[in-house]
Length: 470
Image (tube, rainbow, N blue to C red; front, side, top):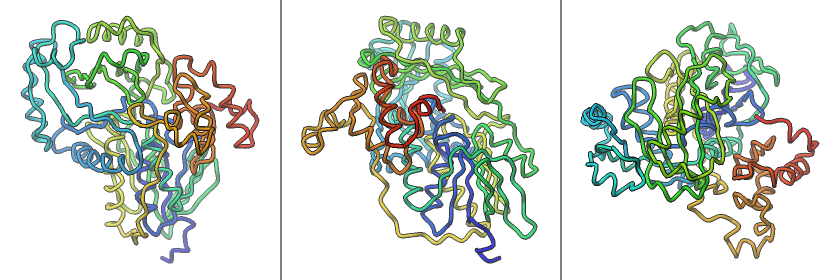
């Protein structure tokens, strides 16, 4: 059929990290792309609340799609992060055995890692473990070292992918919840959303927690998403010297266990829990979850008890009844479902997989001239920040005018963010783009100034900017 039959070549449903990565990949070709996001911002669902690790895939199920895509995604994201300014810290991980049973499980994990193509893993004894992490609680029997696991900023990953897509011509529609998808008799689809209808040659379902519901709009019944709630504790920056590596637990059948880890923002994180819940919007913390994580923190690293909590946050993972990603591509439709905690690490490889599957199905791909990725504002504590850059401040004094004192965020950064290709819609969006409001006071001091600046730059009332949290 003629290309003019449809308004779009591709409509992507979902603006999480996978959807944004797919939008970036497909927008590098001569395609008319639109991304529909139900929230008022991209990356405002599962992609913003996770353990923020760059996974090697060492512990994935050998032979699974997840194993292959996490391994490839680690390679792609590590390269892209350097070009795009996504903060990544190569701390390495230590998977700690606390019981004889866990110690006996370590050789099996090494064998699984080798089957996944990752051979750098090695076993270390308790003496070496405590030399590496002297603040661990007593009783550890040994560990596995995974040197290539790392920390990253999940906020910047999604925003980087979406920024590249928008600059390459992808249309972004926010507050656009998909309500129905119809197959057209002559080929293609009609996508109905709260932001209007579109006809398209191809649909990509990257709707995360709602991917099963979108799949059923096209009369499939292949999987069901059961939200898995993960609560996490964030400790004050003064606790950061306590831990040098990502301290992992021996995984169980349903969870990777509770970890203690630095963050790229200079804090220490403990979590997550793993509780299946019914509601796909159940992001409230619980007294039971907080008590459990405090107990685990005291066991794994007792010195954390002397430090304050900065924040408690909750994420929902898109778990299904299957033990692998649910990627199905046929007849102009790509379903990307069941992407769990490894989704940030695998996102760019998922995008490649979708691209190749759609091309094999007949979607014409003519690559545009390559363009370098947009350089993102740095949110990493280990890298240069504007308030420390004398030359930058000399050129523009706004970079020396700190607005958020907890996180050292300047007026210049806030103004840049408000004028960016994918600007924030509310305070939560500003937080994920700048770190403002993330610190000890949680916005008590700076929220009014940040809201006023965002309202002025967006032309919206201050009350609206305050009230529309994602």
